Amino acid sequence: MSALNEYMVPGLIKNAPSPCLSLYQKTHRTFPENRQDTLRYTNLLSTLQRSLAQKYPAREIQTLLEPYLQLADDEDFWTHALDGLAVFGAPGFFHAYRFQGSPRELAIAADSFHTKPLLRVMQSSRRFHILSLSRTTAAMFEADQYSIDALQLPSDFPATLEQALGSELSHPEITLASFGPAAGGGVRRHGHSSRRDEEEIDAEKFFRQVDSAVSRMFSNTSGMPLMLAALPEHQGLFRKISKNERLIKEAMTTDPQHLSEEQLKKRAWEAMAPVHAARISREGELCAAAIASGTGTDDPETAAVAAAEGRIAVLLLRSEALLPGKLDPATGEVTFAPLDNPGVDDLLDDIGSLVMEKGGRVLVLSDEEMPSITGLAAAYRF
Image 1: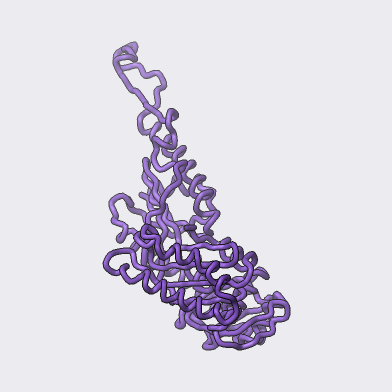
Image 2: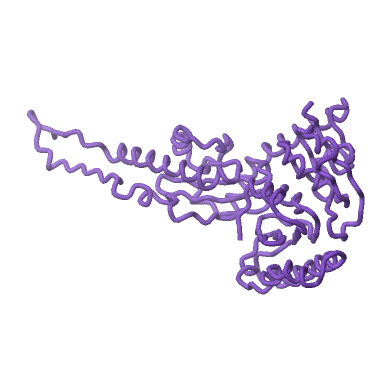
């Protein structure tokens, strides 16, 4: 099993030999809802087998599907399911990914992997990390509008103050009797720091280690925004020392240790929802204006040619739209064909992959968020 990150999809696009098998399905976290997950999975495998049988010999099909069949028998894998599953296979290649969010169930054998559902899952405008921070503890969560999961921390992550500082942890001792009397009465103090001073020094050291670890282990590899959940005084100190470029100004200024995961998710999304809506609105307005002025398009065939030429800056794709066919990545020429034919993928997905390869931005949106009804909207670079 692998975690999703922004670098995974380009790797799938460029590196795998044909045929590329893509399987998506909804899964369930708990019993008894998850009892039917393996049955749906085997039904989708049958769809792949029928598609492959139109072009490939039985022995080759058996080799391609063998790791899929082994996964079907892995009880531990299905017991620890999340909301969705993506499984990719090709000659010499097999990866399964569990993720938050429920995809449309789909099984495709084509010349490239079908990545549009993953793009929607991975979009940083919808998904984000939460750093739950106190003076002595740190924890990481991954969340979106619908779900939240505590992330397993690597063994070298500084999850506690003691783990981070070890022998460097301060132990201030203020023992008045040892100082002796001062001239004229009173108590003579010899420069010992107060407990509060020592705690602030320790907290800053701890926060610096947490900031470095979060950047290295989570933010840099996922590209997701990072929301800080901490008391106001800890917010100020952490933001002062943080070098994490993914840290956003939206925050939860409360003690996260007093919140359940559900409360944490609810409060986090209340802060993130306006950020997400504003980004989607900006991209939609940009593409709509480009289409109206002739510097963009909502025609799939025109967009395919522009994608091959590297002229698309922003591409919006409708998540539930499917346009079966084949795309020549060199010319952008499209050929329409039934989706169950091996080698045929969703043209919208292929156009999106091509735009990504050429350095453009791709967002996968709901019907309500799309500025067009054709399944895509694009704005040109020039």
